[in-house]
Amino acid sequence: MKIALINPNTNADTTMRMVRIAAPHFAGQIDGLTAGFGSTLITTEDALDTARKAVLALQPQLEGYQAVVVSAFGDPGQEALAKALSMPVVGIAQAAMGEASTVASRFCVVTTTPGLVARIAQRASELGHGSAFAGTWITPGDPVALTADPDRLLAALHDATVAALSDDPAIEAVIIGGGPLAEAAKALAAQVPVPIVQPIPAALRLVQLSLSTQDLHT
Image 1 (tube, rainbow, N blue to C red):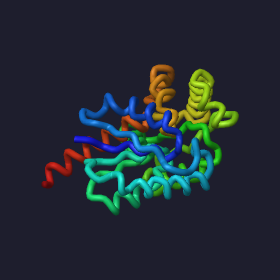
Image 2 (cartoon, one colour):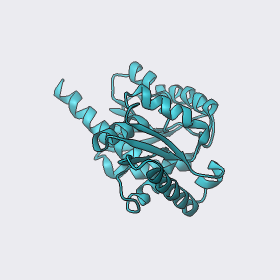
Image 3 (cartoon, one colour):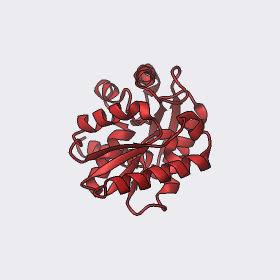
Image 4 (cartoon, rainbow, N blue to C red):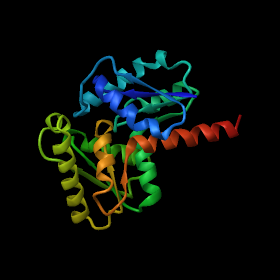
């Protein structure tokens, strides 16, 4: 059993880090595939649209896999790939929001990219979570510089999470929105009083469930 984890940005180091985060949550082989063009970090709607094209361009490389994870929080290309392929194709926003909705009646996203706030809200609505979605809280500063400094990133995500819980006490779970934020999301889980939903592990759990359901119907 092997699955492909697609990094829709062009940073191969990020791909390797995301595969390492994913590995404990899947018994089989996980191969990381990196977008061949686009941005090293997706921070704008234009970059997300380009990432969709880059993800779809990887389709010829997906032969022989049993499932695919699209590991950027906007799920670029996930729905198109799911229609084109006869295997489960899971996006990390899809998985994280689905998991958050099972543990919380109200959840939010905390992330580093102000330019994607509207797309995150759009994705929540598309997935049927509009009524449970409390909004997106953003860390201050430049997303690229912040993502490059793990200690600053963790502190900023912590502060934004605390702000979200203070602003809206009804929030019962927080999603750390972004594949490159996976390591920080894992560390943050022990620091706040509500569940932190980590998108990559959530995606692997959804893959396992999808594969099990597929087996039951074959």
